[in-house]
Length: 479
Image 1 (cartoon, one colour):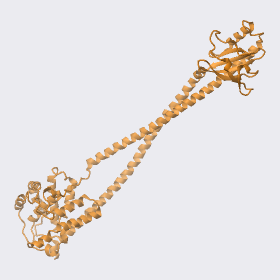
Image 2 (cartoon, rainbow, N blue to C red):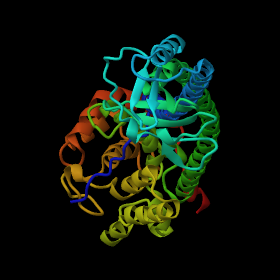
Image 3 (cartoon, one colour):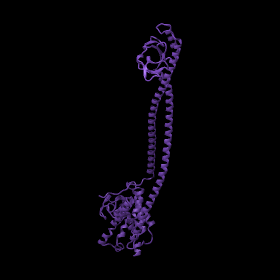
Image 4 (cartoon, rainbow, N blue to C red):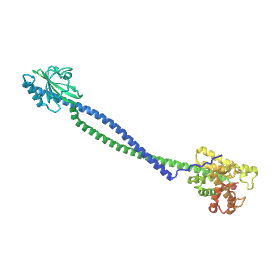
């Protein structure tokens, strides 16, 4: 079964507006996604940079504070050592006046609550220390090794020579790191030890770290905000430029499409003009066929899914080429005023196939085109009958393309109501009766129903477009 060729209509203005709105929404969504993706990437980058900055800053701050505390330890050790050496106590025996004097000095000169001072003998035994003597020391003095500026390598604190204080680090039993400075006390056979715990470094550096990180955070947020604003503006500018380019392309495409349509319509008009010269009918006949076909199509619009405004415009052009195949029929048959013989009828009926093949060749050169498809359907099938007894393919019912069914009725109405040199015109009412009787046999019942509802409009078009004088075809005039 040959399927009816109903082409989808071109998008109307409402559909175009909806498509543009959808495209705008998609573009906006894509723009938002791009901005969010950019911000997410920059936020991740900023987070990694912030973390690296915080770790690096903490390390640098702790190192700097540690150096400061170590320097402070050295100053305390130098000061205490100088004062103790100036007192020149006789000895540092338990309960001796010398020991009491040293104890008083280290208690009085301790410069912070966290700094502590110790005095040990040459064997590393504790002699005295600042603070409570009953408080456990929690330090293994024998394991402490320090570095002296004048001596290479690390050494035990009991080996620190006279001169500048040696420095180092020691971990208490609780796992807390201490910075330490050791000063030799010449003449006493003892060493002065000054130490401060790591918590001092962290406490002292915490405020600096917080200030630095707060500044880095504010700077990062400012960069993210500026980047988001700049990205949004750049994307909007790009969209604006792209929209201008698209408008230009749309205008160019529209101009080319219109030129293509004009070329196509000019080609069809030229073919119709050729048919006008070779046909026994006249150009006015083609105008009337187009008008009748349009009336029927508009009546059926809404009931037949294939019919819309674009389809009707195509039908008006396609109907003008329904008999284009007659250019291939010889004059002796085409101009014969009387009835055809069986052989002449067989040859004459070939015009439907000749016309379809001619237009199919045009379509092969043009490419796919819904108008040319309809022209081929009309040329080939406008003599088919609803009951399947027509020609050239004996199609029946809805096998016959919709456009051909409409043109078939319009062609018969015009042929019967038009006067020719070989026949008189039938009255409108008589033709209405003949066509009504052909419903379900020659014609589609739905098309006949539409015709009956429009018969007054058909009569008005006939009176307006049919000349008062006898129409003489150009081919007959030239013969």
